[in-house]
Every structure is written in structure tokens, then in C-alpha cells.
Amino acid sequence: LVAGVVLAGLPVACWFYYDQHKDAPIEPHTMGWLISSVVVGVTLPISVWEIVMHLRYMESPLLQVPIIRILWMVPIYAVDSWLALRFSWTEYRTLSLYINTARECYEAFVVYNFLVFLARYVALSAA
Image (tube, rainbow, N blue to C red; front, side, top):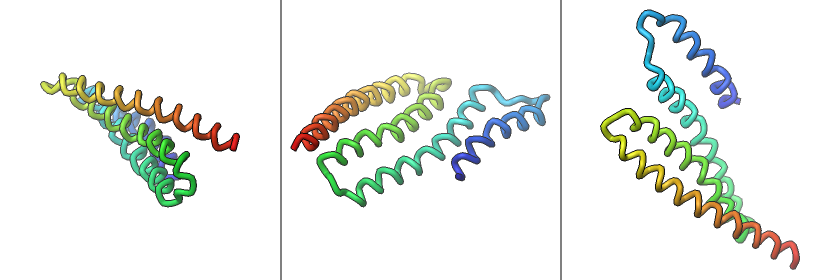
């Protein structure tokens, strides 16, 4: 509920900010970084909570371990995108290249884990 209110109110808050500060507007890159900060702030607790719940109620480890690895994709992508946006207009521009490369490697690992999950699910269903 709180996440929905924050995400619904974010565009309205940005519009009010622009409306009140027409004489000294904030740069679009900075506004995008601030908006992404709010979205990452909402995304991380939800994702980590979901991962913790899978760890807490581990009833089928063969299926839940790949699911947990897949669920880590959300916080990794959120933080990666936030860091890339944060550093893309600074002197640390090349740092975002390395961060994105690490994200792409994790994406390949997630695809592998999804295939592992599907294979295990089919094997357990057939047994």
C-alpha cells in the first residue's frame, strides 16, 4: 500500500516541484536520479522481503534455491540502474560500464537458473 502511494504520488510531486520552481528549474538528469532513488528505495525492501520469506519457509530446496537466485535480479538491476544513472554524467562515467558488465553476467546466471528451475520442476512433477 505504501509503495503504491509513493509510486502514484511521485509524478504529482515532480509536477508540483516544477510548477513551483519555474525560475530555477532542476536539471532533468538530476530529477531522473531523484525519481530513480525513490523507486529503488521502494523496490529494495519489497525484493529483500520476498527473498527472506523464501529462505524462511524453505520447503522445497530443489525449487526454491533457483527461485531465490532469480529474485535477486530485481535488487541487482535496481541498484545497477541507479548507479549507472548516477555516474553517467560524472567523471566516473567508465564505472557504469563495469557495473553494467557485471549485471549482464548475472543476467546470464539467472537465465541458467531459470532453466535449472524448469528442469527440476518437470523432474519432480514426473516422479
